[in-house]
Amino acid sequence: MAEFPRTMVGGVSLSRMIIGTNWFLGYSHTSLAKDKFITSYQTRQNLVDILSVFFKEGIDTIMAPPSALLNEAIMDVEDATGRKANLIVTPHFNILPGGPAEMEPERVFDECRKAGATFCMPHQNITDALLDRMYNVIRDMDKYSKMIRQRGMIPGLSTHLPEAVVIADKTDADVESYIQIYNAIGFMMTIEVDWAMRIIREAKKPVMTIKPMAAGRLLPPVGLAFSWNTIRDQDMVAVGTTTPDEARELIELSLDFLNRRIPDNTLQKTRSKKSLE
Image (tube, rainbow, N blue to C red; front, side, top):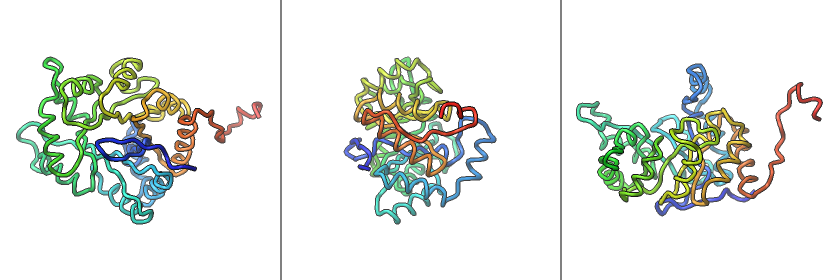
């Protein structure tokens, strides 16, 4: 199997499939019980086993909030494979005076750099709070981008609001990529899917699409077929997995869709499907 296709973002080569981490760190978008299951199940070794599957196929781009557990697993995989991870960190920090000292932007960005981040893309709860749709500006974004670049990282922004992409483009904000929710059923999206599709297609910078399977609400063949077939060659898809087998399945399905093949993957079986065999 050839290595997974790549794209260039801010002068850095990234795998077009991005390793998402909600199903590593306990953000299921399903229930508190599911969150607890994830955090109780995912050990450092389990994360290493999953990451190793991705790295073996050339998928070395990881999107995550700051996480000591994940950083340890990444270092293990880097040592074992000799392949350096491209880490996209999505931090949050104080945007108003009076917050905790440890959450001041300078300290947070220092920690991101210390963790080995290649990209630093302020999380949605930062970006969307700074978005001013009256004056068509993302307040202070360039200030934060400057701080990020001063620390040797590449700035971008993460958003749940498609207006953020449009306004960043119009104002030539100092960012190299956008993280944008995009899936076939519009899960957690604020506008219709066809509108989001148009905005991604017309974005000036490569777009990192997230939640392609709508946090488990779409079967992988459905969610991945839609995403890979409606984004540009420079755009990316972040996927979440709980086990190595899930990682292998998503990689194989994605390569089939990217090569315009109908997948011939082994299907799950239940007693109710016996008559179909």
